[in-house]
Length: 207
Image (cartoon, rainbow, N blue to C red; front, side, top):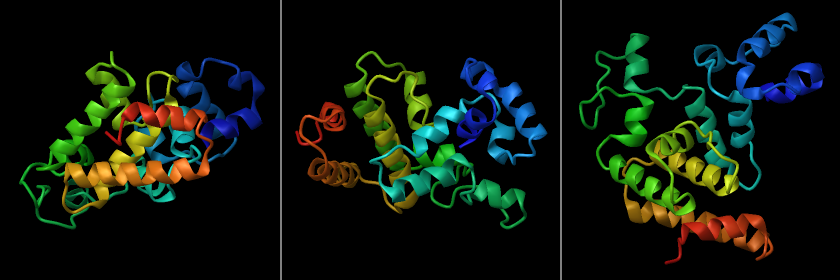
């Protein structure tokens, strides 16, 4: 989205290191009167060009993308957010009593912890040498630190976020079943030798 606009506006900026260009991009877009998403202004050091591209990646379910869009733009009405806008008396999670933030919902709220741990285990199957930072960067920011097996990492992260933020109860069996169902749909649409299916097999969902 943002980076596509930059590439169409300015070849000079587009050829620079995208990781180092946050300030340049911001200044350029302001001059062009292009509206910048609030989340980009709030977290300018993230690699938003890559994140937006990942969010729109082909062969990822539309429902997952919708949830990820709301998550990345921080428009999901957590109790903490509602409390800041005087819409509730407490910022505490109604399920467990902890501060109800998006990170809390996807990593630390009750049974959601088990799904978070399961997603990290699946990610290790893709990257055996991955570190905890890689897990956070991929599963919580949708920005894998490497392009190696990029489709399956973004696919897994999108499915993880969708499940955590849309299901009232969290069960590992249900989470894995959702992944298996969506993987089966891709198998019917892609050649068995396709890169997409090769990457999905790394998760070993059918074992």
